[in-house]
Amino acid sequence: MAFEDFETKESVVLVYTGENKGKTSAAVGLMARALGNRWNVAFIQFIKYWGVGEHVFIRDIMPIYKDKLHFYKGGKGFYNAGEISATHITEEQHKQAAQQTYDEALACATSGDYDLVICDEINNAVHDGLLSLAQLKTLITSKAPRTSLCLTGRDFPKELLQNVDIATEMTKLKHHYDDKFLANKGIDF
Image (cartoon, rainbow, N blue to C red):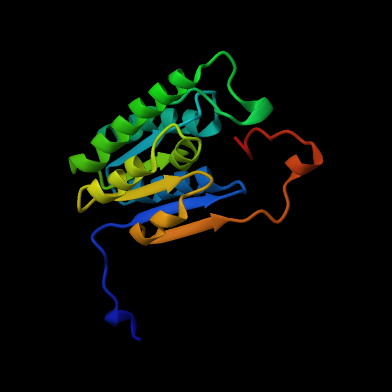
């Protein structure tokens, strides 16, 4: 097939999932590419409430991109993740934060105001039962026709693969965490 035989889609749904690092980093790279093309971008972050590098980066570039970049940070931390789980946060508080963040994501994705909506760590929220599979499917199928959607986090539901255009699984070959080393600032967060 020749290059001219291919078409361009009006929008796509992308998934970055898997057990290894790089999902949020890929989404931040996608955000940079979209902003570089003068797109309107919404970056909606589930789970992470603590300070991470992408928060500082997005805060610092927001004055440059003004109304082209919308950032919403929701979530109360890791839920049901053993010793790294958020402390002093109830299940109901986690669910309420996930629902508020979902509502923001759905509003952005259906508004038609954004060329790209990134829902960072939404897959974790669904896998952990903070959001339902039906809610994730609604987000995917209800987005505005010209809005691309990026969903990140571990454990993307296989039954929804038929509803996405691009799915990348980050596969761990090796990670220093397995050798009892903590995450490195600037690399892992």
